[in-house]
Image (cartoon, rainbow, N blue to C red; front, side):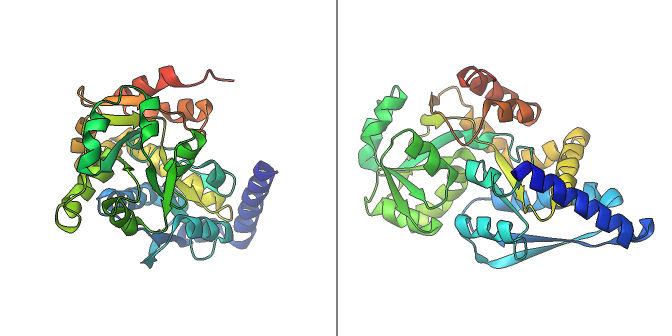
Length: 307
């Protein structure tokens, strides 16, 4: 039913556009892109915004001019999803893969950070470092409670694997809760951790991390587009793949994530596989050409066989 509705919307859009506008007018129609405000103490949000502009620029000749409107107040994940479903205040956002979002919006099948979020490190307090250093398998992580924000994709991963999860409502509050010993570990990607640690040194100096102990899974980050604008999803997919082919995507990615890639894929990292039920094996092969090769080679042997 979901696929049928998406196809119907696309047909109606194309029909309406062709009858309402002459070819020259179609080219000049302005695409309004409405993006929620997401506040993080790391540079990946800035990167995503630049990548969005790049994808839109690459497709301007085919789809026409655009205007991006950024909200100026923080939008929680559940509110972002509701905004996508309504398609008025928000029509594009980004997130690590979530099965629920796949059923409520259009997932653009291109991994925005090459799957780099698949390796997960942990902020913690100094008293937990000795225990973290002895972790030798996934089951050893069960001794720790895990902090997560409401609506985070990693919360679903942890809950599905029967971990003890303690929830906080807002991003900044997670660090306050960790420092207050409300939970033991706060899972972060390499690029989040490296950016956030600079902030924590002054705001939450008791928080630390183990650079050698991690979990890993298949956790791509995608653009999600409102079902009401399937043509925008098509435009972004074309733009991203065009930027990848031209080398512009890699150039932008390396400007922001070179250090994080080295950190995540360091030979000294002991990364233990955890299954992610938000994604399918088919999704992996759909986006494999755009993943970090070393990471794809690490993930692939752990996936269920293709159906």
